[in-house]
Length: 285
Image 1 (cartoon, rainbow, N blue to C red):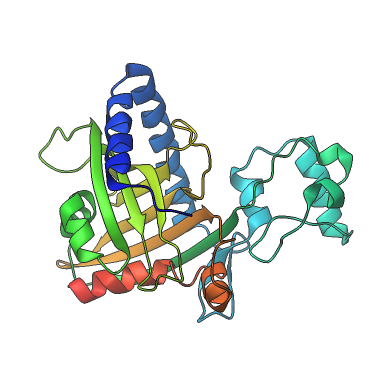
Image 2: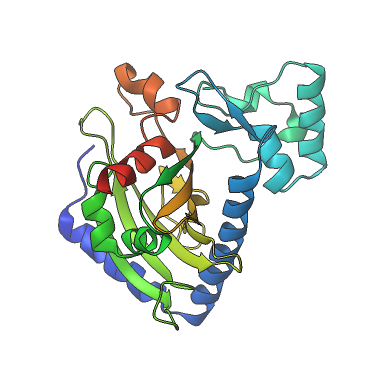
């Protein structure tokens, strides 16, 4: 497939920037960002059974069904699926290893569930960083500084617009819309591109949150290959100069064009994991 010309990308960016100016769209983006921040904080503080350790370097990953129980739209059909899982009945659900035909493998009563060929990758990492919270927040909210610091992960970034500006000289309450492309240093792993809102909020206990959430549901595209579910970090001040940072990555991605050699490391979530973001911050200190 031929790459999209740069001038077409720029035109798309311009149209996106114009679209976010509409009042109705602004309200929708604000609502989505606030909900994403609430989810991020819950994901940061909750433990088992929502989060589980796997054998991949001790990385924490989400339990998909527990996530649906906590955050999903849990209707009668989904409840029936959960009962099947709990009693061990045969079933086929979307996962990093599942390439099933849902028309054949899922009973007709489940046909209203619109599964897409997107793999879900999740990870969580917590560590102490020798940097105060405000410096970390600035590192993430300044798009140029963010792209420069995380160059090994972020290959392209564009600030498309600012929905909410700061009112106290800090980044507290700032909401901006961005385009970013995430990559690995090999052409055999396709780059991942998406539009998303980035929202920064300081909570009453002095803890900061910076969350990303994709906007493809508000600005639809013919084929979505990558989405960022609520992802980002929660930052707590520790002592005079340090911070405790909990980073969460939760994405949906179409890996069908991925080279088989790299499929295990990418599908496991390790290639674009929270551990990589945390390691980059530590190197920057």
